[in-house]
Length: 158
Image (cartoon, rainbow, N blue to C red; front, side, top):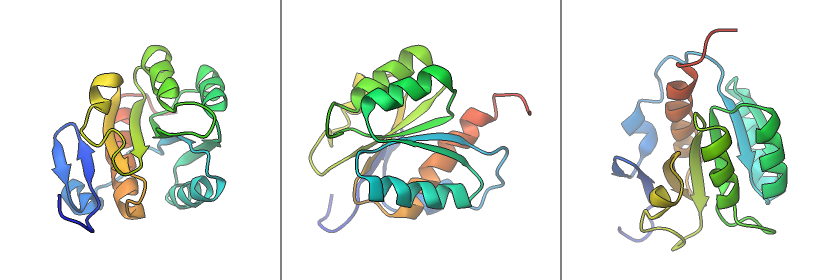
């Protein structure tokens, strides 16, 4: 990967500008139920604000314990998860989701070098994408909408 580019990795390979690759302009089927587990409150708020403005149902948890507790009571189409939470590994939330909510698609946010080899996909069965912490917001939105629309298509209309 060249310096200065943001690396995104999905189960199908690497993508430079993912919003274009996934065709973000596609019609939305249903609002996506989204859980963000991020220990940086300003980053979590930034993501939540933008995803909520797009019509998605967004919940934010600041710790692995809070994320697991929320998932034990509520379904989610997509889980955006910081792999390096302050008090515990975010992968504990992905593990819980794999068992308790196998329909939930997990997008793991990592810092440079951490799990950048794609090994995250072998650690959690419902992980569908990995994104760098410095990724562009529209790339994260494209991932959420792509995987969230696929997940929400299988649930009945309210």
